[in-house]
Image 1 (cartoon, helix red, strand yellow):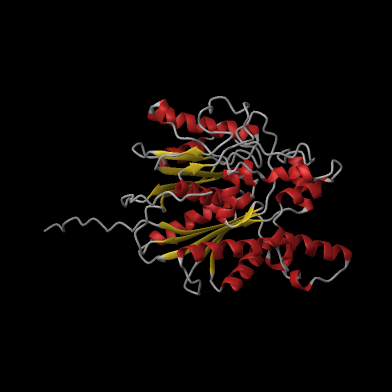
Image 2: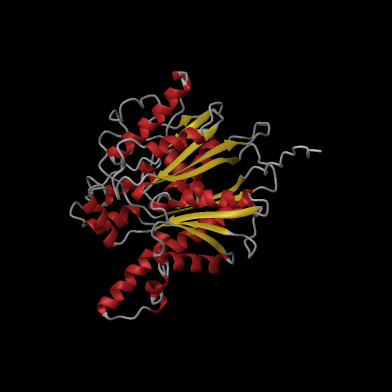
Length: 419
């Protein structure tokens, strides 16, 4: 007799049990989110700089984290540890040898590498960074972070500015395996404010002019002229042992891909990202907000906006129901490999508060067609629904995540008041 067909049990949803964030605007998720809800941006600091401040000092003053300057090996280790500890505290997770960590970073401990190179050139000895050239900056970051947290870093993802979301995808896939972990930590970090990278980005034409009166990041603006570097770390605690609370989001789906069109430039039409967007956004899924990569380079921002419009056109969505957009890099800068996970953490905060921060850099000069999809002066209320987050990087790397609200009934505690 034929054996009866048995449907395998579906894995439990992966919920986001805790989130942490360190940015130049705040040492924590909620300090940062309160400030961007009030319309603050890291480039507000340029008002305190002298007009003749040199480029390196401008970039460091705007995008640096004061806490990270007290590090002994590399700034990325300091802020990554802080983000993980915040996420673990929120989740009530005790870090240990049985807590696997997925790490995403495009540069790793690049500051330590930079100091080691200077030491060799100047014939000086720096014992704390002597091994960096031999084992590579990503290995140094993983080793030091794991030693501080007492938890193993089981995977390192280096996929340019999509690194954080690639690490999230890898962690989700591992957790959904039959023998996968029931809890995991995902952390993404970059603190790449070193002279070699700053000058490289300037030569490539992707860095905003590093002058006090011009160093601005304007994602989704017709005046976009490049990005502003920032030191950031974001962390998530993932769990599939308990059902999600109404205030929590779950990983609905993740996807990664690559479109190797050019080492730096994005393709004229984002074919891969459009395909991934079509996959991550089921027809029946209401979207509360889009969080595009939007680095503040006009070519990429326009192509990404066109991809969103294409899918919305295919779905024939009522114009009155179109979801708003939020491009967080205009507020916290571009954190390279941490950018996608930073946007994911901000999406969690937006879900809890029911509000998207304003985008004050868009004052009547937004890319054509997004009027009404954002507010430049005050927070935008959002409906309960999914959040779509994207990250793209040099070489064509692209990754996305759909964050779904809990299926549990809302008992009136979904929204968190923020002063």
